[in-house]
Image (cartoon, rainbow, N blue to C red):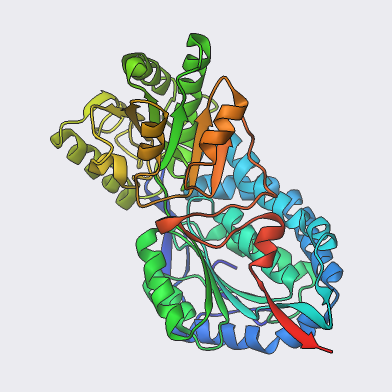
Length: 473
C-alpha cells in the first residue's frame, strides 16, 4: 500500500512515479518510501471526491457517524502495528506513542456518534427552516508531529458532516495514513468519499489548496505555510480552517506556596517537553514572579536533567529524537542565536547529547536571562526548549503572556482557582489550562492571531465542515 495512492475506492499507482523516502529519526536510516503525488494525482482524487457528495451526504448522519465508529474499532485492533510504525516515523517514546499518537485518534473517531446525536441539522426559526449542510469537498493537509491524531481531527468530523475528503498527509510521517486508508476501505466507505495522496507541500499541498473543485481546506502546520494555503484558497473564495504555530505562556501567579511553586515549575517543564517539544500548543514560556526567578531557574534546570534522551523503544527514555535533520538544525540554530544574544543556558544547549551522535537528538534545554521581546522568547522553536521569564505583578504577566504574534494555548497556576480563571480570561489564547486542568478531546481547539482560526474537536470541530441554508416558508 505505501507504494500506491488511494483514489475513488482503489489503490492505484501514482502518476509521476517518483518516491519520497521515510527516515527513522533515531537511526537516520531510510526504512520505507511513499509515492510523491503530483498535481495530476491530486486532480484525480479531487474529481473522485467531487462526484461522491450527493449520495454520501444523503445518508443519515447517524450512519456516517457509525462508519467512523467502526474505523475507531479497527484502529484499536491495529494499535500495536500503528504504535511501532509511528515510533519508527516520528521517534516519540513507545509508551507515549501508544497512549497519545494512537489512543487519541481512536477516541476521535469513536466520538462521532455521540457528537452527531447532540447536533441539530435542521432548525425552525420563525417562518424559516435553517438547514446545516456539508460544505462539500474538503482538502485536509496534516502535519508530522501528531500525524494520525491530526488526520482524525479533520477526517472524522468532515466525513460525519457529510463531506468528502482528499487527504495530503505529511511526507515526513506518512505511513500511518496508509493504515487508515486500508481501515476505511474495509469499513465500507463508498468510493470517492475518502482519498489519500501523499506528496510534498509545494507540489501536492498547493495543488490541493488551489483546485477549483475543493470547497474547503483544513490545514495544520507552520504559520508560514498557513499563509500560503490561505493565499491559494482565497483565489477560489473557499473556506479555510488553519491551526498554526504557537509560543504559549505558562503563568505561575505569586500566591503559590513554596511546595506548590516547585510542583508547578516541574510540571511546566513537562508541558514544554512533550513529544520532544514538537507540540504546537506546548507551554514554552514559563512566567514567574521576579522575586522567585532564581528558584524557578534552579528547579527547571534540575527537572530538565530528568528527561533522559535516547532510543524511543528504551523504557527509560523520556525524550526521543526530533523528527528530521532539518528540524534538529533549526532548533540548534535557535539555541546558538540565543546564546549570541546573551541568553543564559541553564542546562542543555546546541551540542549533541552525550553518546547520541547518530539520530536527530537535541539536549533538553532551559534558557533564562532574556527579555520578553527577544527572538528566543517570540519565535516558535519546536524543540525541548523552555524559556524562563520574570514578571512584575499580574498586569505585567498578562502583558508578557499576550505579547507575541501567537495565541494558541496558555496555562495559569494559582492557589486561588477563581483568580486563576480571572487571569485566564485576560489571555488571548484559544485553549487555556488552569492549574491541573486536563486535556478535553471534546472541547474546541484552535488559535488567535497568527495561530490561525477555526476550531477542531468535538461539536465545534464538526461544525467547521457545515454551512447553512435558509428556506423561507
